[in-house]
Image (cartoon, rainbow, N blue to C red; front, side, top):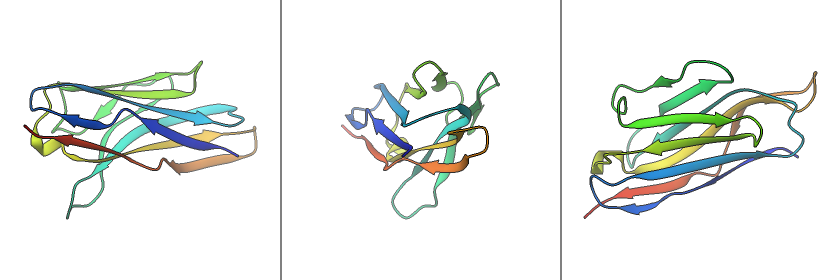
Length: 121
């Protein structure tokens, strides 16, 4: 059974950094796209960053220049390096993936369980 397992959330002071990881477990044939979304209290879930395997990353305007997304295809893992964090970055961060477990079986919208990131002094 395929699933996404996230790690790396926590409490950080403003200006600090965090790195989130999301590993796709199970029998992975190919990863098409992986990304990160976030949902702050009282707000809709929004795209933070996404990248297709071998493609150019796409970032929300609010995180450009501060966040970096990368994929390690050998480990089926996506990372989100977050720098210069502000309280506005506080949210639950969710990993998302479009992947295949075989040539014929595709999971176009897998979600992780979410990891809480809190930016506060």
